[in-house]
Structure formats: C-alpha cells, structure tokens
Length: 265
Image (cartoon, rainbow, N blue to C red):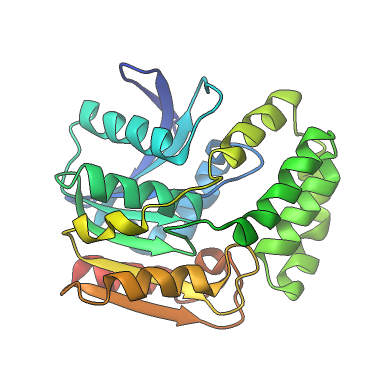
C-alpha cells in the first residue's frame, strides 16, 4: 500500500487508496492516537468486500496542524483535498470524528457528497459527551502513553474485545512519540463544542446513520438526535446495533455489508 500526499492552499494531507471500482468512496476515520496511515494495509483488508465495486480513498488529517484546529477546519481542508484530486459526488463514510467532518462537508459542499454514511458520530457534541475525550486529552498531556491507549481501547470496544487487544494496545503505546501526542491533543480539542444541528436541513444527499445503543464515547443519544433532525429527509435511514460499542464499524461483523448495501442502493 502506497501512502500518497495531496497539497492544497492550506497545507498538505496524506491519503491512500485501494480498490478497482468505477465509483469513488471516501473513508474519513475517527480520532486516533496515531495516524491511520500506519494501518493502511489492515484497513484495506478490512474493506476488501468493497474494493471490487469502488475505488476507496482514506484520508488522514492535515500534516501540519495549526492550533486551535476545529472539526470544521478539518472538514474544509479535506474538502479542498477532494477538489485538488478531482473527486466529487462521492460516497462518504465518516466514523466518529470523521462523521462530524462528513456532516460539515455535506452541509457546506453539497456537490462533493453523493451519499453519506455516519458511523457512531454526533451533530452536537455536548459537554457530557465530551468527557471521555477530555480524559484522553488529560492522559496525552501527562505523557501517559499506555494509559491513553488502554483508556481509548476500553471506551471504544466492548469489554471482551478490549481484553483481546489489551496487549496489542500496550505494545502500540510504546511507539507513540511526543509529536503523536501533540497532534492527538490538537485533534481531540478540535471536537469540543462541535454543533451543526441547526444546519442538518441543508443536507440534500441520502444519509445512513449507524450507531450502537452501548456507545460509551458519544452515547447512542448522539445518533438518535441526528435521526430526529433528519427524520423528514426523504432519503434518511437509521440502523442501530447493540453490544458492539463505539467502534461498531470495526466490531460488528456485518457493518461493511450495511455500508455497501446503502451505497449501492
């Protein structure tokens, strides 16, 4: 898997792509301790079901981050990257913070969003929903790499999955650099106060929101609020899991099939 870079007027951004399909699908990952570019091969393997029908692009955040750097800033920079690469009318899957970015893109750049899947995300990150992220920020500021990775895993995964990956998370924590922590803090802080609820009626493309009733990061109320606000949208669908946690996009065995069915419908 080759990591590529795209330059825009505001900076540059890493991305990778895979698949052979004529239609383009973009994945906007959620907040992570380290760049998802290091997991490019694993991500491509996880989405191999989709690669026959789509050419898939996975984008990182901007390489050199200003501070502060809000979710809206992230979305606008990513939208500019789409334009430079000649991408439009996209199938976009945004997970967690990536879903927040996807909402902004669909609102502000409707020509870029053909269909939208929102995974475990929020249109209005209330203070109570930010508490988990606040703890991650505290651990990162204290330089507690292992504590951060373990708390991150504990919150996004169901207990049995967390225990399965505990040692892997501990080993990954040993590779976290000071720059990784600085970057993580800026990106995590960027979600504070995010709110596009009053703008959701500007979304014109079909939308599928997928959540889990046992999401301990943004909680299921976040997905249900999106559903309530988009209920009158003629092309809105909702799907809720139970027991797969915030990272249902990784843990639910049929999640990729859900995405594929929606994008092909």
